Image (cartoon, rainbow, N blue to C red):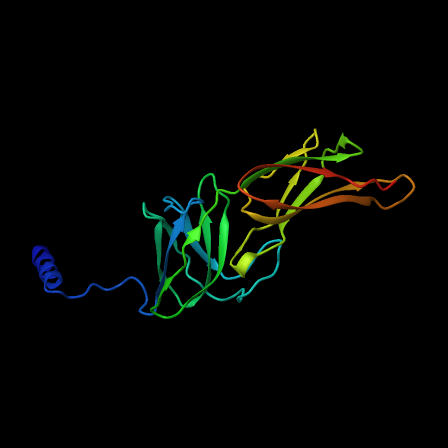
Length: 226
């Protein structure tokens, strides 16, 4: 009896009976190509879907925070192409990740029922390694907090989350991730306990830097306040 069932199933498939899809009938698709900084196809990039809003320290963005989306992931092939399938109709953003590269986010991809969205080719830069020092009157400041924020969003399609690190015993810091090209605000702060006041005072320093691929050394000098 078991053998007969198997044979019937094989006959049905060979006769062209369509197999049942694991995706809902209104599912959509996002596809595209990722290029390196030279404009050549880039393999091995992990592309995944997220809700279409900016989260974390930036705290703003388009799209509903509660809009349901489908979580999908795919790696680019030798031609740099990826394909995300089974997506419910919604607004999406894409996250790009690859070893040795800055994580990138691309906003505002609308998927309609049964639609295939072809995303324009995306050039994926390696990004910048950032390290530096925080000083006060020329002396290293251990335990200072360094905050980094993106201050420009070209075409409203990409952004970077805020990053924060603390200086070591020598007043040095290094960001744990690469930053993509763009303008960034670097701000160093520390609480300073003034013996003449009851409340600790905040000392700070800020710089806006235009980053490109490579390695950047950032020097931040805290402003004296007494």
